[in-house]
Amino acid sequence: MLVADDLQNFPQDRRCKLDNVTCAYCGVSLENNATEDHVIGRNFIPKGTFSRSRPILVNACCDCNTSVKCRLEAPLSSLSMQSDAWGEFADDKLLDEARRKGSCESPTTKRRVDCSAETHTIKSTFLPGVELSFNLTGPASIDINDAFALARMQIIALCYWKTYDDQRRRGKFAIGSYYCPVSIAARNDWGNTRLAAFTKNVANWGLWLRRVEAEGFFKAVIREHPELPCWSWALEWNKNLRLVGFFGNLEAVRSALSDLPRSEGAVDSLVREATPLLQERDFLFFGEDERTLPA
Image 1 (cartoon, rainbow, N blue to C red):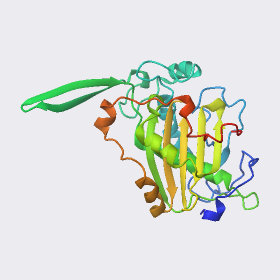
Image 2 (tube, one colour):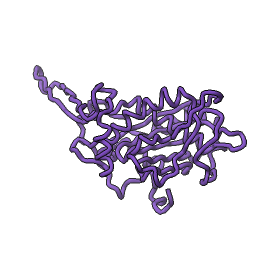
Image 3 (spheres, rainbow, N blue to C red):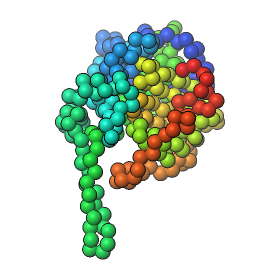
Image 4 (cartoon, helix red, strand yellow):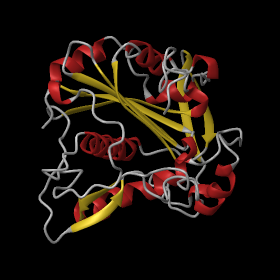
């Protein structure tokens, strides 16, 4: 388990293929149940984009790799590659991939992703005795619980990789046991109030890890609070979906959460206008003073 002193500066040239003897996701000892796993699944990002990257490979137990992670990756990969409500793609490479993966089943509709547009009925009392009802239709939605479950596994494995000890053949796990998701947003809503506040609040936290892989179709950053045993994390999937959160000591995480605006309810997030983020104001993965640093 990590303690504050462990989360310091580790060599940036750490090898990408580990020979670990404990599962990189749950820590169980690996004997006859070891499987090799790409932390960022080869099929999670567009085909061929790993050609110029050094993907992280770890050993994992069958339960974590096959039973859990693979089950989560397939639909989330497909959904994170789909176009927005206006039919626009974040990158041209996603167009063919979205078509190829459109046959994957959506966990929320139980239909093909490319045939899973969802309709939400909104009802409200307009005047006494008068009820207003209207429908909103949009692309298939992400199962938020599944998305944060996969994000947690990716963050755990990245911490394990960063703290890997070649002699002991194992890494360490995030301090404490408190993992707190904060926000998830599609590309056309990266400028929303909660995500903007998160970015601003952690901007001056110490950079602990940053990975940009697969031609930018996967991004990760972990920052360390300057005083408290608390770390922020952020992921970007397929240039389309961002997830952020905290991990660390429970009270420290609660303190970080208290500085954020309250999360919007499901109905509010459906009816409010999405808030795009201008590229020149995008500091989630590279702060204002980090834009010239290598990934």
